[in-house]
Length: 343
Image 1 (tube, one colour):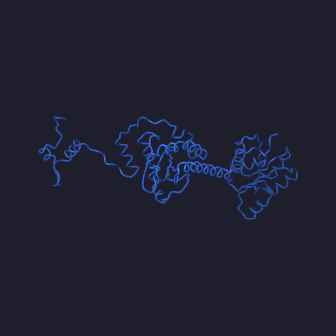
Image 2 (image 1 turned 60 degrees about the vertical axis):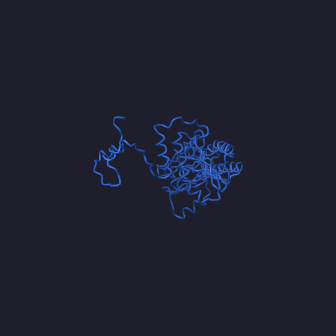
Image 3 (image 1 turned 90 degrees about the vertical axis):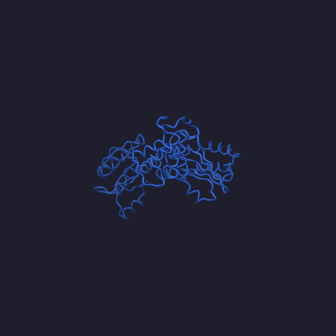
């Protein structure tokens, strides 16, 4: 027989919200509603109630009084109370009441549904907010474990998983120059983004930065995430095949873990995606300019051919007030202007 739930609240919008929420979990519940304690007792006369969900403040008797009356006739009833009352005495009474759960309005729907399933002994289909947070943290620890194994296999100082906001999503180890690396994170994000534009692919670019203290290797993981490997000799030519093979092998595992906590789309990791053959409507010069814009926040100077330069001067006229530069007429006499006959 389907578990029977009675919702008692004089606010119809609250009652309907809770009923709609119960219907979403598809547990086959039979749900009835009543606007007062007196009408709730009438519902009780129609059959046994497995779960009472009641507002604390009701017209006539309050939720605690209603609970006592129903328990007198139905001792096994489970009870969840909700309230919009902030009075300390009422809050204390709710805490001391022997009920399965109580919530303050607005009711957190996920936590409410989880409490209903627990109270009725149903299979859990809904996580509480605390459980969701715990699960996310567990998955984040999993990302850290992947990076820790990778760091150990490469004998690196540290490995960072960086997102598009220049934040570290997960890490293993600690770089010696931590503050300096942190200041470079926005630049690494820009390099990652610009390289995708220039190459037209997520896979056709890696970035090596070698210095005396520690080398850096930057490799893409997804559209928005990249891995930064930090350690001595990591960018040395003899070590690169091993380094890149290990980094690419880790990307699939990382993407799977990232998908579980919602920080990566449900798509193939970049290591398995085909490279694009053409960058749409983008010349080499334009690519370089965009790269400069992203890295340095400035626009690279566009090239201008000689004919366009001199044509511009003609449009402005021949009056020239800069004695250290030639006028168009002077340049023509010296044979420095384009020859129209020769194209």
